[in-house]
Amino acid sequence: MSVELKPGYKQTEVGVIPEDWEVKALGDLSDIYRGASPRPIDSPIWFDEKSQIGWVRISDVTKSKRRLQETTQRLSEIGVRHSRFVPKGSLIMSICATVGRPVITDIDVCIHDGFVVFERPRILQDFLYHSLKALESGWSKSGQTGSQMNLNTGIINPTRIPLPPTKAEQEAIAGALSDADALIESLEQLIAKKRHIKQGAMQELLTGKKRLPGFQVKPGYKQTEIGVIPEDWICESLESMSAFITKGSTPTTYGYKWEQSGILFLRSECVSEKGLDLTQSMFISTAAHASLRRSEVCDGDILVTITGNVGRVVYLSGVGCANLNQHIARVRVTSIQTDRRYVYHFLSQPSVQRNFNTITTGQAYPQISLKQVREALVRLPSTKAEQTAIATILSDMDTEIAALETQLAKTRALKQGMMHNLLTGKIRLL
Image (tube, rainbow, N blue to C red; front, side, top):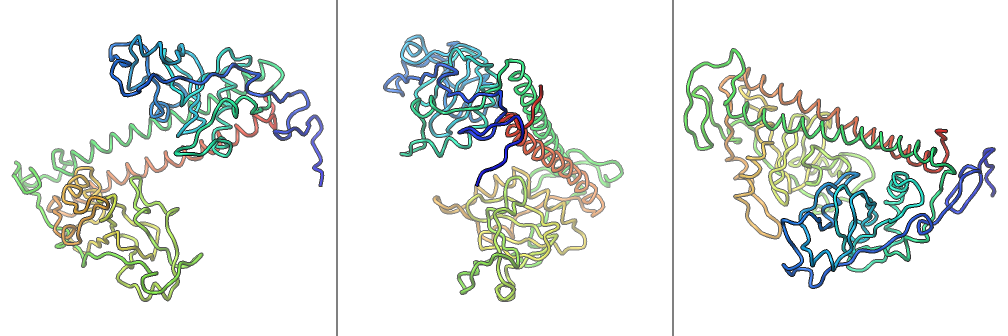
């Protein structure tokens, strides 16, 4: 069945593109060379911390954005002679492990055989960079499998991309995509800054180092089992302020099957560092739910992982009724003198998670007991009003960060659409 083309477009091996565009192989658009590694790679003679020549590792590229500005290691003079030197301003791409990640070097570096460099590009380098970014997710289908995925120049050279006819159009496309990248990076930096500010606020407000106006009842501080706190604060165990702290169970143990829809079932993977991740959830039937009442959770409950990544915490809100597995502890604050959101913020501190991890048992699969969760101490203001005021400030910060993360996700999706439309000529800028 033939597809009717829009006027001014043609069908090619890479899809529909404008009539005046071409399809070119990467090997025709640049000289592509693989890196080289000095052997044996762990010999200290190849490295020199005082050297100005960086040694690019896959980890350096994965933590970089568009531009590579630093490396964790540097090569000695003899190390440089046994590798492939890449001058500042070059376009390189990883071809093993993290396959197809392009980056432009802002420093002089050397690359090993897990990278290729695109030398003497015959098109605008920024346009080539964005074309490679568009190919990144598809390289794994073309790569060779072994102990890890990898590419080679035999695969890369013949790979074909659509090409606008003029440098001006290449510049316009690259500029638009670079602007989108800049917006994404600015949002990422703003989110990181907001998270840092929140961590500082938690450290001050949840320890009483900083008191909110109008709440100090008694001046001074006192020593407790979990550190110094204000004189008018208290320390209480989770057990003393909560309903019976319990954990869930797996429905298949009792003969029930997973369902395509129904009652939400939360696994430990749902309790992520960034909050509740429902993409990792499953479903059970109402019959299974009725039989597994011990595993039932609802809005307002605090979930704490007790196996694997011990000490991760989420506060349930907007979920309604759900169930959880045996790797998560349910904390349901019932004390009328205690603000449950305050308890959540206290438990979500990195210091609390570190403390849980110091008392784990098991090496392959670390775990803590429900008894240890129940006995965990919480330092808190003696008045619920102060607890609520602190929790409100921290929750407002969470709301702001969540809004920024939503904006970031939308911007990333917009960038993907721009790449598809601009790099195929579906939308023309000139």
